[in-house]
Image (cartoon, rainbow over all chains, first blue to last red):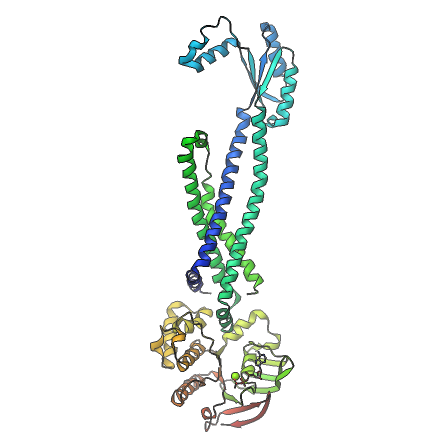
Length: 291
Length: 220
Ligand SMILES: Nc1ncnc2c1ncn2[C@@H]1O[C@H](COP(=O)(O)OP(=O)(O)OP(=O)(O)O)[C@@H](O)[C@H]1O
Ligand SMILES: [Mg+2]
């Protein structure tokens, strides 16, 4: 089979039906962009969620009137727990020093104080497996019951929110991915079908001249694949613009966005995903047209 | 080379060909004649499976059409060069590409195609029209493109359906001469025509078709 002919024929048809093709290329591009953005959000949420165990800690404030032996007893009790990875005792003196350090020039605020108003505390790191909203709550509750502990604080709301966000993003991205993929496949399917009907007469003639199925199909597969490929290329441009907008423009207003990471790997595969969807769409079209 | 064995063809309830039996030897040139609607085109269409016979068997070279697998149809069609009565040219590509198509289908290399096409066009005297589009040609010119396409790949069998239907007497004689040359080189040729001038006095075999039956055979 002469591939050069198939390619020529496919690209001629791409040019001849430029509006249909352009429209479906843009549709594919937008769809792939949506997939990319979904991947972008998912990626960042994963990163945040994965860094939670390192950042996440429970802070237990000790009662004010404990002796150093009693304090040590509390620390030992907590240390024996199976679900903690480590802890750090912060005496009220350390705490005030830390505060003074944080306040720096504005440290005069503390000058009027005759007594240290802060409490001693224990910062507790949980083992990775226990950093889920429910077990964190459980652990915090138990620690609070320990004798000598006054108050327990942990980022309940944040942990909850991030876990919920992560779970729903995972579910949603599966749905988005499936929907968009079917959409892209359907677009190339329809386009190839239209292109086929436009060339029906020509195809009948080529068949009578003795063309094999492969010969007839190849240009349509190439066309479908090209629509996906160009859709992917335009999708890359869209994703880059989005990335620049987020990192350079939006992050001036919302500095937190600066820490977002962009999965550049997905940009490379975008045209490949496009080609794959395009070819799947054309294959379905070709199959249904019994070509 | 060509065997028809009790072949019948019906369209709806109309009998178009009834119990046709004949044999064409390899290298023979045979005419099929008869009035309009006699079934000449249908008879040819059965041979490249544009239509399939309802009864009987047809053999074209090594192909037994009754038991031919679908995947084999392209190869049957490649062994047969057809001059279609209704031309079947592709109007969106040039004369050159129309003729080249029959070679590209066969996987002939691009660098060989140029010479082969140009030769075929020369044989039917339209090499100067190589870059024209079919719609800008006269009926006779288009017909010659169809002939060039049918002969370019030098098929073993050439089926010509009214190959001179749009041609003036002089050009007709010329085209028949081209077909005879190919015949001399070994091609088996079947020509359907109601133009008796094409075979008168040639001594070639003529099958007379009427109402779907072979009603006689003569030497032209
Ligand atoms: N696709 C079809 N459907 C129904 N009837 C058909 C079809 N094709 C041909 N026929 C009928 O079959 C008969 C034979 O047609 P055919 O084209 O074989 O005749 P022909 O001998 O080639 O005529 P002409 O000399 O005009 O080309 C005609 O009566 C025609 O109406
Ligand atoms: Mg006819």
